Image (tube, rainbow, N blue to C red; front, side):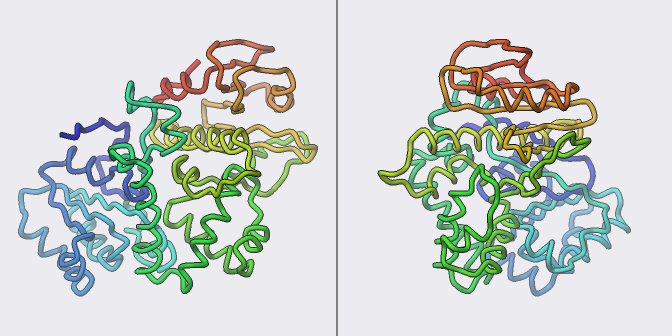
Length: 384
């Protein structure tokens, strides 16, 4: 029997959107934490057809449940016209809470639909964090298969990941009519995997998958709207030197990267492993920022001179610069960029994460084993 793994995510007590990719455990978490709520599951074909044809039906459901306070609509993007009726209910029944989940922001973001007039908070649900899994966490498995709960729980994670990627091509892309050529989009997914953890160059991606730059840019926006990837902006606050302007790109899960990335004799295991490790740290930092009480954002930093820091976490009270190295031993040259950044921003605290086993302090920079860091990273608490 599969045991439920407690999650760090906490829903607001008011009406909210919960966005997160498929398989990250939103529905499981909601059923566990709101057992008395009225659930409308739009993944059920019959229910979906009813609400697409009659989005105002939600008002009848609310009227039929006079003693229910919480109403959950799973995958709200499939029937976005329901939001008009929900908005009306929010105004007439402020005592009710509507929790609206979504694995795609495309229809909601681009369709000009009612987003409840700013009444609903926007929250995000992520794959597992290492500290959520506790002793079940394996760095090697996380780098190979990722931390999507659907995959973690599988007895055949590699096959489940392949099916998961195919699911998005079939259901979210083809059936929603997001692209005309699914084959071209599949080639794009392979091409974009080479951009994981790199400065985003849409022209190069377009050339790799043999489509126009405009088509590649549209594919990239689809990937972001499906919450499968995101762009990491450059940190440029009070910049003392010229910085690059192009963002970096990351897929949302290390396992998705590992399975999408074509591999061959010319590929270096250290290169692929290093990018995978960086991405794994990034997905943890994104989850940590979203799950913590303080408002924080993730950035990276790169000077025009070539100095680069993988991640910068910046908030009202927090200011961390984090470099990730896929090596078991440290060398002075690996700290040059961090030292440059800390020279420009002495208010920040520098961390270097590596594959070794010792905790070290070198020239004011805290060096931590990356697995130890991930295991101890919990909301509102930064490992030191």
